[in-house]
Amino acid sequence: MTDQPMDLTSAQERWLRFYYFARAAFSALWVAAAFTLGQRASAIAAVLLIAYPAWDALANYADASRSGGLGRNRTQSINVAVSLITAVAVAVTLQTSMNAVLGVFGVWAILSGLLQLGTAVRRWTSYGAQWAMILSGGQSALAGVVFIVQARMPTPPSITALAGYAAVGAIYFLASAAWLSVSALRRTGKARAS
Image 1: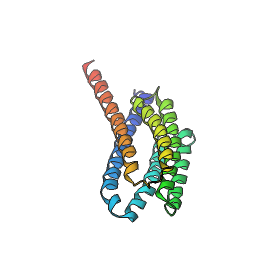
Image 2: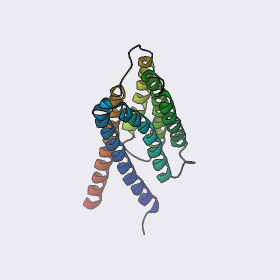
Image 3: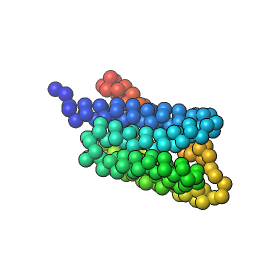
Image 4: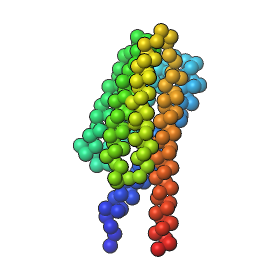
């Protein structure tokens, strides 16, 4: 007889590993594109700037859906809405200035960081590797404050101002995925040994 809750926990951990690896890969690709294509063509930079929060909305929606639905995952439900609104706001403010875009990203980084932190705290008792997500959420909120301050500077920022933020996010997601993978390997090793 199988232990169904344990099977559900294992399936959820497998999903989280995949999810964190996918988030890390997307962020790494986005950073590479920002430093190369995004600096050469303003149209590509605009697409990248809109795509980043849009991807966050899609990723949070997918994770919430696989983790019991949007109703059970309020922080992610709100994060989906915040990220979609941000993608639209970025598209609108691109017509104004990059300073305005950076300000929008600042507000988004604060809100989405705090929501990610809330999601990680909620998951703390059920799954490992949430320490990296808690750090990521907190650092995102702090980065948002820095973006808002930088948005008030007279010099217009470039897309690379956001690339460092995305790169740090990629590292946190990769750390979470690796931590979950190592934990799963250890449990498998202990199960075989006993």
